[in-house]
Length: 634
Image (cartoon, rainbow, N blue to C red; front, side, top):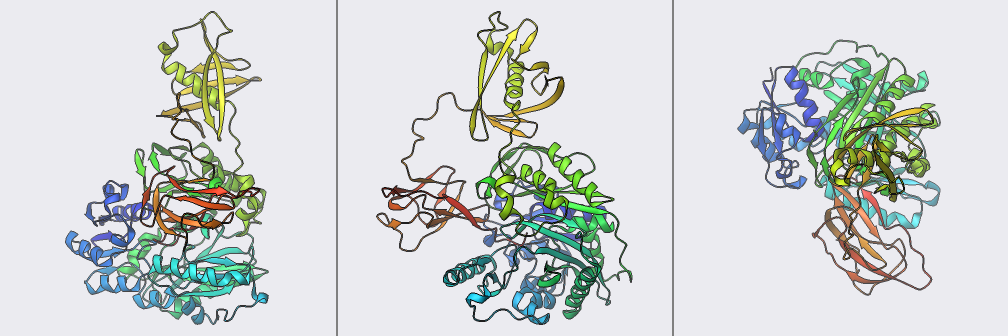
């Protein structure tokens, strides 16, 4: 029997595994980097071991240090979670060689499926050889790892060599393996996967399907189980192929086999030899705890001959600290509050007051709703997210709500090109016009003495300004003998935390919370502008500013001050929260100033470079996210 489990991971997945361990009476051990010293997963474990450093390469990817930590803490088993070393056969062997129980598939199975090229060979699928125009578009893909790392869509043959080089570099950096391959790119297919669970006695369960088609940067955003509107023939084929893949490598434990479904055909993608981020939707539909079953399989117990029956439908949305409207740029800062309505499952590695740093993946939480039907589950999750209190950095919450309510999604006609088609509309600002007034009235109620009491002169209103959706909004209201008033709006109630306003006979409640210069009014975030703007915060035209804190990882080859550049040309790459952001020339012209070099740390708004525009040239986008986090598949 397993007595103590070390989780070789961090954040949400570590906390989720600890929850099952506690329920099972198993002691828990966390490992943490210096950046994660006060992280939730390090706080809730029974014991925690420091991994010196902040980078993944120095900490969570150091299998030797993690094995030593397990032995030092008295653990007798190791669970890898997902990402990091979860699909590293060498790490699995090191755990076993140390006399510890490995809560995962055999190293040989990991090795067989770790390379996507070898996995395809096992399934009888050959990658493309020499690529011609007739093969386009194609997908360049890392043979190891996942989560969109080392992955490039190529639509022009002239771009292939450059994309192969970039993909090899990404793959080598992320996984220590620069092997890539090329396969046909299935346009606008549905990403469907099958959850499998196998024991060491020959039983393999296929626990239904999941649809993970809504993705950004080849990383999943919204998932559901079962995958809707599949024919019985396709569903049977997916189950059979998944079980075939598991048996081909004598699999044991939890795993996922992924496919693209298009034109009534299933195209095998890969097998992930680990637990998936989206496993909660399968747990909800089959009423199982996949982590508890992983523990039982690791202890040598047999599964029942037949898997449990599915019931209802479940949908999961991943809440990220990122701005979808700005190239999915990750956000940092204090997470003041994170709560969701009752009845919604919340898996998170954060709690109120935690800081979101620059070192790791920007996923804050997973929210999951289960209901008897798909329509009910989707409605429940959208409503819960809309009512959730998420106070802190910018998140993708509004995008999630709009995605769940989009006609293509509600009618189950989505595919992997969903965000390519609809991102602009889904991120169009739609602020509540009364939110600034509610913020001003709450502030006035909290500080009544600041304005010198009520006034008899209605021609002299109080004025406050807020930044909302990038624009300044001016609010005017009055102090009177009867309280606060505003033209055209009846103020039913106003205190520091709650404002009730009535317009056209309809009352609406506004919950208000202020943290420094940020004010959250229901789901709307406002910024209080400085009374006296910093005159030094001006930059020359063509200045490229850091969109987030991070590290300059590389500068374009041969780029120096005086270089001629084209609009949209990549100039340098900035890494933040384990995602790489390509900073491009805003216009055609000359690079007149280059302030940074590889390895340099920068803060938000730091001047990176200046491009002086050539007369008559026109600018383009300033940056674009190009590489997701290297620590593991998402």
